[in-house]
Amino acid sequence: MSLSVEFNGTSVEFDESDVTETLNEIDCYDSEVVVEGYDEYGVEYTAVGEISCEELVEIDEESVWPVDGEGFNIPDEEPNESEYLEWLVENNADDGSWVGR
Image (cartoon, rainbow, N blue to C red; front, side, top):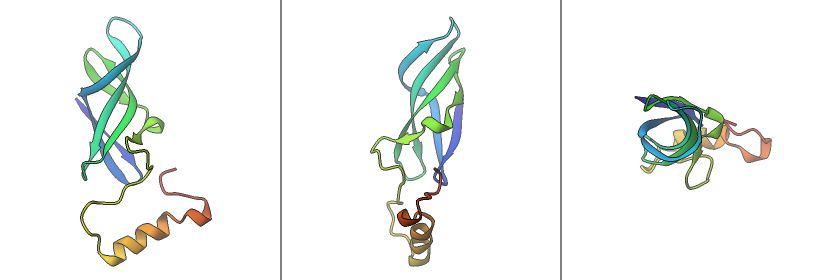
């Protein structure tokens, strides 16, 4: 079962087949794990999740973070000017409030 989580306005998909590490075995059925996920642009993310009966049942949304550590992503394709300007306004570092924080 895959789960989708929003991160900075981008949907990130996580799947139990992408578990990279078991953090804590809760009981014989449940574990806390580190899982990798990807957004529509192919950017890789990591998060803490919970596995139950070998299925991913929960993602801690506050633990989602890009593997490259940037905290936001710009699409690989060339954005049109109005979309890019909108993105810059929404992520103005001077006002101290980044979208998705």
